[in-house]
Amino acid sequence: MAIKQNILIAIECNINKGNLRRAKELLSHYYTQYGMDEAYCSTMAVIHIHGGQYPSAQVILEQGLRINAINLDLLFNLAFLQFLRGDIIYAGYLCEKIQTLSNDENLITEVRDLISKIDSSDPSVKRANHRCNICSSEVNRFLPWGGYISPAVSEYQIIGSDIENFSCPRCRAHDRERHMVLFFDTLDFWQENIIGRRVLHMAPEKHIKKIIDLLGTVEYVRGDLYPTSNDVKRINITNINYENNHFDFIICNHVLEHIVDDQKAIKELYRVLKPGGKAVLQTPYSAKIKVSYEDETIVAEQNRLEKFGQADHVRIYGLDFFERLKAAGFEVAIIQNSSLFTKEDAFHYGFNEKEDLILVQK
Ligand SMILES: [Zn+2]
Image 1: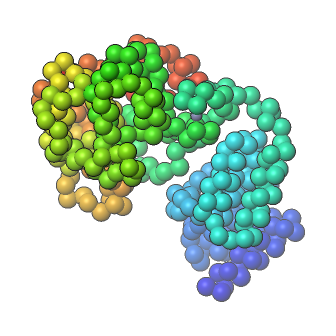
Image 2 (image 1 turned 45 degrees about the horizontal axis):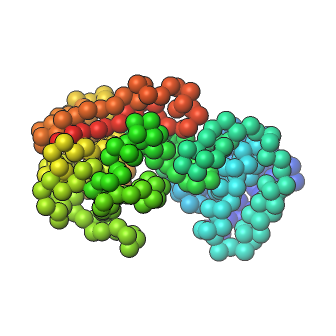
């Protein structure tokens, strides 16, 4: 361990002296001994940053963050790199994240220095060319999703979140919230399905919840199996404790891919919806497979992450997702994204242009 640390210190000294060639030699020695770990990625990125090789530094840091998404050295180097590349919004976001994660006073001091540099830099160097429709901010960019996608999962080309344009740097609204609000605005769903209605909102998205709270619903039930705030009720979607035909409208986004007995959940949603009522059931799915990929023997979080894309997902839906909705009695009335929005809209507002509105009716 001491030797490992000594090599890293020697490398740092060489970097500081500008002796990048020697630093690289020592690092390749480190690599043969210890492999590609977090410290390797972090140190290699610093060498690249010092050499002005920003794109490769970015790739190496992202590689390291796949090993450990909350490694503070990696996050700090990534923040510094974004600052150098002029992406000050992303740099600021990363600094905030480090401050919430770190107890290390030296690191906090370095972060504060970086924040003051960010604050004194000219924000007009990069023109804002995106807009968040939730907080009405012009933003330089949306922030990417920081998670890991296994090679197996990427094969499916899942239609779901826009992982490159994931969260708003101002209000943190996710792409799918922004997208759904655009759908609702354009289709006038607030007026048609929310105001004066009984609404069930499962696993309620924070920003959409705020909008609905301000509208005059007759009843607005927010439900989750594991509520995290007082205004959310404990509701098990496979056994919804409401009578038949109760709700006018249901929003249940990105829930069914977590539920082992999803057919029961879909039946329950059908049961509590009034005849003529509508539901929005967004879920990630792959148009490349006809039959959903599910395997109840895959339960370990790491295996689910590798196979299904998230530690708490239990399947990758295929095109039979829509058959499952029909089997429960729903009429599927998908609204094509392309019927309402252009490619430019997708770029401007940061959403996945392939994601349609999955609307069903009883
Ligand atoms: Zn926003």
